[in-house]
Image (cartoon, rainbow, N blue to C red; front, side, top):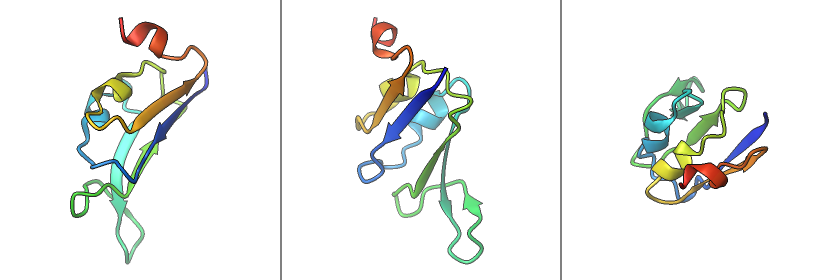
Length: 87
């Protein structure tokens, strides 16, 4: 099944709730080292720089959406989560 996770990175605070909540580890929150361009798995100055979504792992469960206190994550694709995740 194909799902797409859409994150408004301008409003994301980098709290990591979505990363911790994901049951299939499809999300990674990190910033980039300005010199080496290597991933650094923490938030810089309270602002997340990048959220990697491994779509091949995404189960479309919607747990990430429900765990976000700032309502910045949307999920779309086959079997949209809203029909069962909010019951």
